[in-house]
Image 1 (cartoon, rainbow over the protein chains, first blue to last red):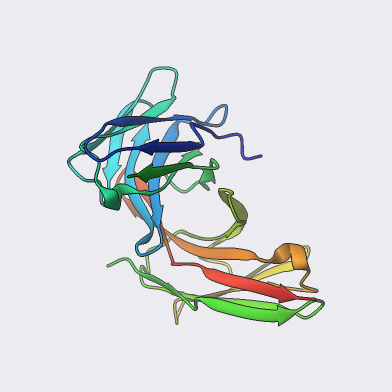
Image 2: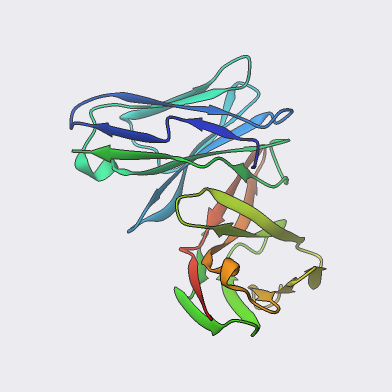
Length: 113
Length: 113
């Protein structure tokens, strides 16, 4: 158990809808990362937050947004969903903002029908 | 640019050693990581090596780093059926206060009894 909690585990929704994925980092970790894993693209970095502030952005679509709250949990919002957004979404956390290992949650499997 | 390459498949017999190879491009990577993903699970941090080291051993795992060739390998001694999983190599990329990991597409290790 990595200590990173993601909810829900599975999500099935229709095209055009909006969903929110939630992540609680390990106790003491200030940094939260979101990754998307799909068969064709592999693991793609989406976005990083450190102590409530956005620190780095990767291949995140404009339809997607995230935030990190004062209690350090994070949410990833996906809107106007398309079939191609079906993937496994991972949250990871680390102690600091740089040079520390990432610890991953078990992911949320999103299926868009 | 950032790119991590791994072979996609490796098949070994139980009790043999497994060697999973990885090449990366970012010569400024501070740490290089190996993660393991079992079916339906998140990414489990296996081990990592600091870029100024050549080798790190941790029980059955040996990591070798050739910084000149940007080549990383993971050797699993006495491979067991429980080692069957996807193994991801990752390089760290730092830019100021930004920090993220870039992953390879993963190597599926199959251990045959």
